[in-house]
Image (tube, rainbow, N blue to C red; front, side, top):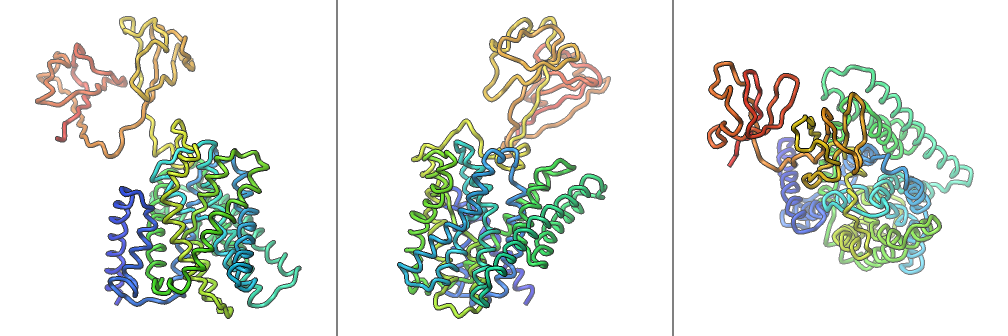
Length: 534
């Protein structure tokens, strides 16, 4: 039985990975493909595998959400996000509540749900999905004006905890109505313990990461995984908001300096990717598409009301007074993608057994399916129509692994007495595209170069350029010339590229030389040689 489950799980992962590659090429959000694959495997799909265990699904998805929300904070580059923090937090708190209220009113007066059922639908659908938004921003490289990418990232990463809190509050009221004092106490505990435990967990973990010598990077990664789970579990244990706690813990750890932070970002990016595949596939697997015929009208009306009324109203009411442009408010309104968190919270409602007369799970699932399909697919188009694309920006700067994703290489050039750049200004130099003069070292002093700066003898000019991308295939080989090498005393031009490869750098002692045709090779030189893979 266990072997069968493992085999099935591995095949599902393979299918999702390869389907995700195809979805990127055709412009569909990969998360939509994961859901559809789950439906194909399910009891109404081609394979017709029966599965309807909401309890197991809720447990697995809740664990997955811990890592998704932790990475939502861990992967956020706070230095880039500080300028829009007020807007983002306003949207993730007041915006979440307003959206829930507007949806509840729609459900009550248009669809004739009970007030509590309307509030429940509003609570589970009021947050945007971090995984969906991150997926579209990164995969489509949406470089947006006005730091809008950071705004969407922080809002979508931080509003799921508030959606969870509203869902928890509504379910508590439906099970056993609370008085005003009890409701306030519940909210205070949710927010207070969530923020407090998240901050303390993050600070203690940070202290350990900086001072404790882990034996290897794998142990360090295990420790941070433990902290992510602990910050959630302990906060939940004392009736705090576990998702808020782990999100805040992630922000603290992802935006501090300590050994091997960037590899940790990549590690959690991979873990989060796996969690997204698992959650979206499992939710698709759990769904029963034949039920859509009974709820599609309600689902469609809720989607339309949410997309074109509730979300835009909340955004314009909150961002308008903060002087956001019409383009930014329009794009933020359209970017309110719903996702896995909403469906997981709907499973919570289904398991609550509150005597619901509506199918919360399948209504929510249907709305999420429409949201990812239409909003996710049309997000790049909407950004262009609203004139919010700015290719002078880089969306990857909003993520805390930016420095590693967009590595910069440094090139040191010594200005000798016979160098052709001697006596020339920086502005007169013809440099390759995307290459910048970053620094001049003159007599031990660092000088920031300007266009009118003249290069002097013995200056060291430092240039920067983007690192070669991973998909560029080449091989480098190091060769150190012994005393009896036939190349000692020969020039670089005589080296023979076709037979031995192209010399792209010479290391001589502590110096690195850029090879010229007349450069004479010496004993002990280490040659960095490019070998043509083709």
